[in-house]
Length: 381
Ligand SMILES: NC(=O)c1ccc[n+]([C@@H]2O[C@H](COP(=O)([O-])OP(=O)(O)OC[C@H]3O[C@@H](n4cnc5c(N)ncnc54)[C@H](O)[C@@H]3O)[C@@H](O)[C@H]2O)c1
Image 1: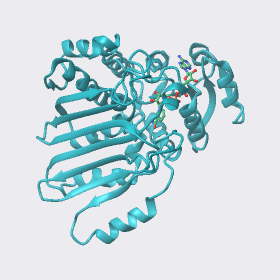
Image 2: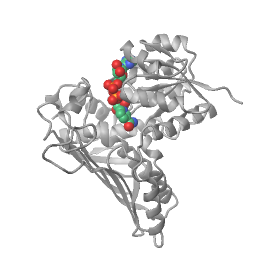
Image 3: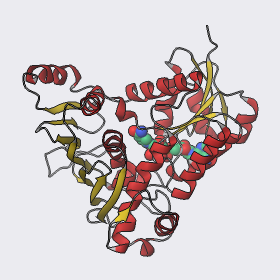
């Protein structure tokens, strides 16, 4: 029997608790420590599990806790530092999305991990939805011919309470992006996974509903091309009512639709999934192969209405620790995190230049994209 892998969570906020719960439930994994710069949060989370030590500094934890892997669940702008500290200590790192908000930092992490031979992954747990896996399988096995077009929708609802709950949300300085960077990025990654290498992005964003209290985008649209020739469209919005974490609207009755991803192939077939409402397990909503309608209806019945947290974090963390144990790359790498980030930041750069941006970005474009979004609001528009 191989020994249990010793794992710690860094960042004991909302999703950090999900990571701790998911890791503690995995066979072959021992949750040994948690860390938050706000020590009360670390103490409170540690107290929920047996024999978990809490820390308020990453350095001390890395020095003392004899870790094999850390799960980084801090706010966006605080992913880089703990992840880099872990890599320098030879400890595997799974970082919440977005990998970072800066392309320079994301590339540095990827390079440092590769140079040191340390496993680096990015959390995009939605790839583990069975509905996503079967779309991917259908595309990989050639059942669609080649994919000619894709649509990626993030039709989400947020409200003032949501943005004001955490001091880092909603600003370029604190969050580094909005509907695209924080929400749609899950499905942008899924699209990259299914379609391959993006070659260009052209996009627009605006702050049209929540502008009194945020300055990042609450609406965005983009066209992404892939090296296969496929053309994908993205629409990302947080302008709907009655979405995640909001009080029910007194005047508007409908619920925010959630996410949708669909792929259309050269042989006339289409496959798709829908996550509705947001945070439910996605279900297959489009599957046009002859004679398979009943099968698709069965999948929907089996998978509809299930919560996605913490189950799909558990599956991704399980795959990640297996990769660490086996010394192979995880299913979702640091490079995948960098690729998704580049599509998002390509939209911001495209708007600033009023022109498409070629991907992968040149070094000069990466610098320009970082300068735009890592500085003040005025510079971004
Ligand atoms: N995969 C998903 O579905 C999903 C869902 C929610 C959040 N997230 C991601 O998780 C991250 C955290 O989101 P959240 O809503 O839990 O935020 P949060 O504000 O609730 O928690 C973040 C925690 O990190 C701590 N922290 C910040 N900097 C730190 C540092 N340098 N060292 C130690 N602790 C530090 C804060 O004190 C806080 O407790 C974000 O990047 C977000 O995108 C992912």
